[in-house]
Structure formats: structure tokens, C-alpha cells
Amino acid sequence: MGKPVDPPPEDESERIDLKSALEERYLAYALSTIMHRALPDARDGLKPVHRRILHAMRLLRLDPGQVHKKCARIVGDVIGKFHPHGDQSVYDALVRLAQDFAQRYPLVDGQGNFGNIDGDNAAAYRYTEARMTEVARLLLDGIDEDAVDFRETYNGEDEEPVVLPAAFPNLLANGSQGIAVGMATSIPPHNAAELCDAALYLIQHPETSSEQLMTFVPGPDFPTGGIIVESRSSMAETYRTGRGAFRTRARWHVEDQGRGTWLAVVTEIPYMVSKGRLIEKIAELLNDKKLPLVADLRDESAEDIRIVIEPRARNVDPNLMMESLFRLSELEARISMNMNVLTGGLVPRVLGLAEALRAWLDHRREVLQRRSRFRLGQIDKRLEILRGLLIVYLDLDRVIKIIREEDEPKIELMKVFDLTEIQANAILDT
Image (cartoon, rainbow, N blue to C red; front, side, top):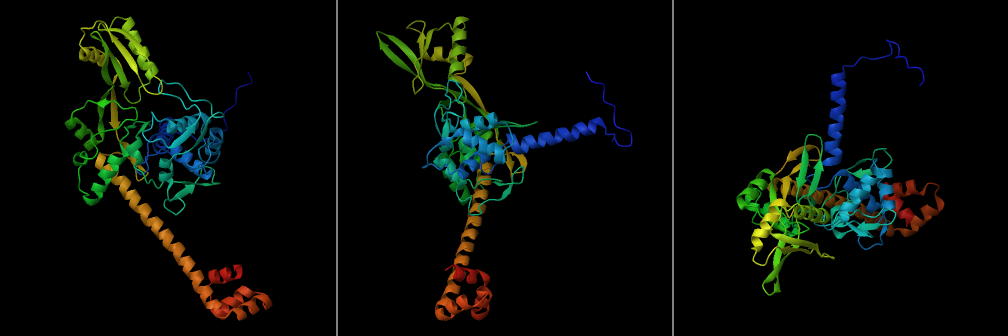
């Protein structure tokens, strides 16, 4: 141990109240977690890390038709240019965007081992490759036509989009999960076609309530399937307030084995339940003699899910046996909804279904206006150049003479033919 360090002299040090110092620092941390990490934006439904991954993939030209590139390359670009955090957290986010059992509409098209529904992890990023899906391309559509604002990256070297143009209702279609400081978000995925129908109706009838929109969006739509066992009134309340839960059960049927024997076969399990863990739990319950009606359990899944449950005797009632499993295992799960999102990119608020769709539609309208203005600007520029060329073509010999003989042909052209600088430059380039 070295000798202890002396405190700085009294006139150089500053006394701060510990309470205010902690408050200030913790508030800064809390705000950064809420704004820049855990909550999705109401407009494009993305958190900053996902937005940066898609932006980096666009810059690497990883469009749906192109060849895949190594994930190590993508992760390197994301953390080097836009997202100064750990490589593992960025890769985990990238992997999740590619998993068709986690995302209703995957944004990344992965090649290699991206994990599975049993809960196994993806291969390391030096082995896997990725490119964007068509849905991701839609989210970025129009970004180079001044559709959205850009801001400086963390080191001021580059620019990144504040929000994506989002020509796809990503917030509700893919959902989102996140825990910030003092608030969390949990949005289940929905069917994009239903959301678009609801959005079209909302454009024509802006006063529509969330409950009326349930005509189009009857409930969540999970990538892993399952059956929602929730009363319509409780779902209407959930969509109106943006808070609540949906009870979801595995889908199952009885398979007749002949001679009066039968098996129960589960083909779809609830969202966000790992199949490996689910089977372990049921096996434990069997060992502990907590499932008197069940004799055995087998996992016969290949690409699709197939969990076979054998009854203790042929006269057991299938529904009664499955009820006992639903009660004790994760074959029935409660998927919570807490639509806590950043509105306007700044304020965390819990939105109902209608408000969430409205936020997306308002954003799309602004994007449409900005892209149209950008295109009109491009047309104006082109017309200005063409007007200049028309003036000059009427007296070509004189133009050639000026370019050959004058020291400053640009200034002379502008003087003689009364051209703007842009027109004169275009003529000299020609």
C-alpha cells in the first residue's frame, strides 16, 4: 500500500451537498436510460440501438437483395460510429431482430445460427451473417430524401437519424419490451394488415375510439401462435388505457391412437416462453407428483413444435388434464401490455391503441410532406439548369468563343447571358 493521498487545499476544493450531488447524477442516469435505451419511439417503434443497427446496415448496403455480410462487421460499425456501448449488447439486439419466434416481422435476415425457441443462444458474431429484410427497407424508405432530421453522433464525426421514416407500423406490429428507471414498457406484437386497416379507418374518422378500432384489431398476434383467453371487455379496457394483460394458452388437440387410447399434442406455445424451460418445468411437476392425470411427456419437435402428453389412463378427460397443466405450467402465460413510449421523441407517455396509431400517422404525414418538398426542390434545380441551357443554345458560337478566350469564362457568361451561378456551372460542365 502506498501512503494515503492528502486532500486538495481548501481554496481549490469545492464543497457539495451529498444529497444534491447524488440526485443530480442519478437523474441524469435515469433520463438517459429512459430516453436513449429502454423506451421505443412512438413514431418508428424502435429503441436507439435498433435504429442505429438499421442505419449502419443501410450504410453497408445490406439491402434485401444484396449478399449477407458478417455480423462482426455490422456490430463493429454500430459501436464504432453510432453506439458507444458493449459489442455483446449490440449483437444481442441484432440477433433478436432476426428471430422469427421473437419478432412478428423480423427486421434482419440472418444466415447461420441465430438461436432457437428452446432458449439456445446464437453463434458468435464471427460466424453469423445478416442483411435487412423487406420490412426494414420500408422503415428506412425515403431517409435520403430529407424525410427525417439527423443529429450528430456521440463523437461529432458522423450523422445519425433521430427517427426513421417508418413506412410500416412497427411499434404495434413488432411490439417492444424494456425496463428503464421507474418505468417499463411492454407491447405485444400485432398483425400488420389489421393495423393498416385500422389506420386507414382512423384517417377517415379521426375521432374513432380504441374500442371501435378493435373491429379491425381484435387483439395481439403472436409469432409463436397460441390462443388468447381474455374477455372482450377486459381487452377493450387494455387497449383504451394502454395498460393490462392478455392471458394466452398453448394450442393443443387430441390425437386418437385407436382402441380408445389418445394423446394430447401441443402445437403452439405462448409468446416469450422458452420451450426448453417449459418442458423442464413440466417434467419437475411430474416428478413431484403434482400432475396426477399425466403419465408421460415427450418433446417430438423438429422445425415445428410438437409436445406430446400421455394421460395416466384412457378414461381421463382431456380438457381436465390440460386445465391442470395450464394452471401449473407455462402452457398458459400472462402477457402484459404497458404501452409506455416516447411521444415526439421526448416525453414518456402511456398511449391507448388509437393514440399509438395516430402518433404513427402524424409522423407519416410529416414524412410525406418533407419528401414531397425535397422532390419539388430537385425539380426546381433541374428546371433552372435547363432554362440556362436553352438561353445558351440559341447562341452557341458566342459561348464557345467566351470559354476559349476569356480568363474567367464563368463570370463573363453570367454577365453576357444574365445567368445564375448554378446555370453557368452547368454549362461549363457540359
